[in-house]
Length: 157
Image 1 (cartoon, one colour):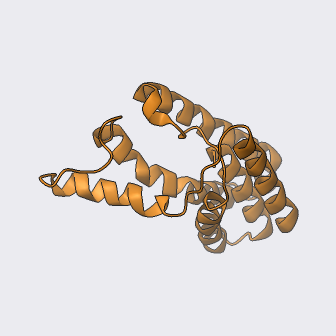
Image 2 (tube, one colour):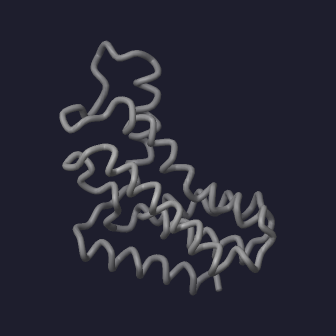
């Protein structure tokens, strides 16, 4: 899912559960639930474009997600509760980032046998959450993502 989708659902969670600990735990859980639904996101086919472009798109998506979530939910909540909930919802994707930035490439899909501990650790942070990912092609994957966000917002409303 896009960061925007995760941030919007996190805002809905924070508006329903205003305890920061409860909301942030639910936001992390929602991340994996959402990612298990077939979807398209900006990370799809990242090996086919320059890394910097994936980074620019990811940062833009994250900023849009924060802004959209704040406009729809955050301005009506205690800022700290909203903020920590959105951060928690995005954390699983951020933990994957070091593998992408420092080690992954179009021809490298896993650490070599001689890789150092840090490379193996960042790969595990990347690989474990990806067990939950279910990808769909564009545009169907965008439609399923919109439906997923709408479902959670209605459920939590």
